[in-house]
Image (tube, rainbow, N blue to C red):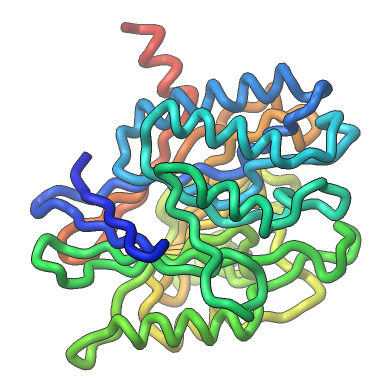
Length: 334
């Protein structure tokens, strides 16, 4: 562990060690059903998380949504607290510092528990740093965690955003966007921590990708030179990106104007592991865990794993993939 965590009035400040990168493990789309139908696949998902967390040896684990999958035909229950408890119990046993943002499946319309109930549960866990965030904002869980240097200066603001779920309560209404009030909160929060006329650096963590991720990928794919490819793949059928199709949001364009956000990390599309830079922002799909939600995904494997983000003393960062396949192969050779 190369960092210290301090909680004051429910807010967390992390202090990194000098000359050592602060190491984040991003996990996403765990999809624990928590019911009779999903018992075997839940065990696979939790075993995968344990292997990845152990191999990553990270300072901080961030889950970018969909810990739970309380859809009865797949899980056999609408009780989304069961999946939450299974995951939290594992993290407690592993003894790691962690936090999360909500995805669109954590609180489906028929799920027993809403975001408030899940938030209260997560906040009760000893090493979970989730915060409900500012009252009155759209969603739940819009909050900042400061990563500071040993001298107390800000290194990077870690920004957590609820990217919401659907336009109505139905999946078939289409995906929602990060709302304008959330974008405005982000800008206010950055202004409060910026000093000496310099805009503070930040990284954003949320679930549903913005449409500009697909736009940037198309420019990479067409070789226009307007976007830079780093790593990963687009493995969804027909280059699918699950961004909101029927509603426009200003989040990405405002982040470009602000100049604070250097990276956005998300999940949602379980087969995509792509990382590109577009309009000065690095956009990264986390490797997913899911054994349950996608048809036949239990047999797929190249997308499954974790994503490692290392933040250096000057606030710059690097991203690498940690595939479950490579961990399993290494363990089998030992």
